[in-house]
Amino acid sequence: MALVTLKQILDEAEKGGYGVGAFNVNNMEQIQGIFNAAQELESPLIIQASFNAVKYAGLKFLQALMKAAVETYPDVPVALHLDHGPDFDRCKTCIELGFTSVMIDGSLDYSSKEKKKPARSFEENVRVTKEVVDYAHSFGVSVEGELGTLGGVEDDAAAAKVMFTDPDQAVEFVKQTGVDCLAVAIGTSHGAYKFKEKPIIDIDRVKTIHSKIPEIPLVMHGSSSVPAELTDKLNNYIVVSKGKDDQGGPFIDFLGKKYFIDRDYSIAKDLVYDLFFKNRLKKTMGVPIESIQMGIMNGVRKINVDTDGRLMITTAVLDVLHAKPEKFDPRDYLTPARDAVYNMVKGKILAFGSAGHAKDYKPKTLAQMKKFYEST
Ligand code: G3H
Ligand code: 13P
Ligand code: ZN
Image 1: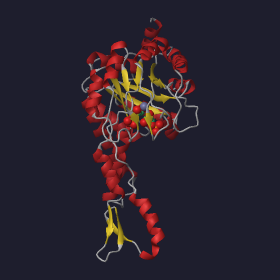
Image 2: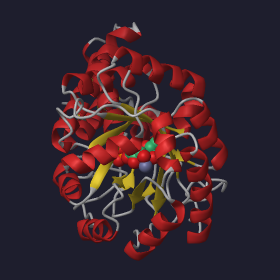
Image 3: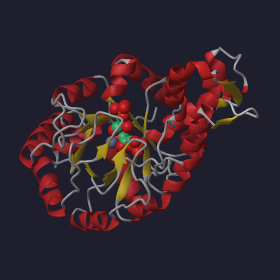
Image 4: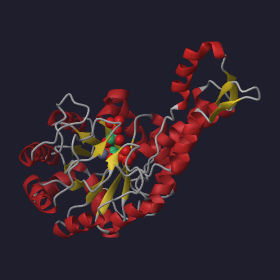
């Protein structure tokens, strides 16, 4: 069994000069797809659950699924990680359940009821992060902290105001908290809507931060590429065109079939237009793989990917249901969904350079890591 800590995975990645994908999971198919890819490419792996994933699946279920994967794929060195841990208590619960790593996101005030969270002060971030570090390290568990804030629209980890990481504050933050790795804000954001036109990622900031704290692996959140072929495909499944028939009557083309609208139903027509003619996904761009690779060349070792997996799954499910609407066995569409995740993760592993590194090192146990922290 190759359960390892995030610290070991990232320290080894630093030695090898590559990045490791940290993939968000909510269910069995995602976990299997991701592990299948890592096993085939002999790559180390980080599997992470957000607290919304925990809300969805239940912590015990998620933990049991992850544990089953660790046992099923003994050759994949994997860290089980809590993504955006909002407070000490939830980090503690995950540590008790066997996570080998937690993120305490002290950058935002998660107790706020607002959808977009206010930022915490530097001092408050240091305080909560250090509290988690002291507790986690006493069990050998690794900790990721975050400095600066990321935007986003679809999840609960979005800041009311985006603030890029200040390099000098990063030095101070690491010194005062003792985190094992640091998430930095450099222009990426969570979810599908990252950039309208041109992606702008502040790689110079990564370089500066890395030059000041070279021993701390950096983490890039919001790193999905949001491929246009997927968003276009999803939009096309909703509505392809509207127009007039030969007699000039309006129709809606929905999933390839023309629906004619009776002129007497003009109010209903407006409703139908509103329902179907608004594209589900607006024009958007994600983080280009080349920008991530530039980040990796400058100290980024953990790359967080969630949205691309969601897009892959939904597209795969719609592919099946569109081609064969009579299918109702979930296995008929969840099998291609799992394969889609597998293909997506394979691509990322190759791009991040972690393929072939699974056997570079012997996994250290939590007890060994505990001793290490005691000696520092
Ligand atoms: O950090 C954000 C991740 O994409 C998790 O998203 O909170 O919707 O599970 P979620
Ligand atoms: P994406 O939304 O770009 O996939 O980012 C995921 C993430 O940062 C999880 O912490
Ligand atoms: Zn994130």
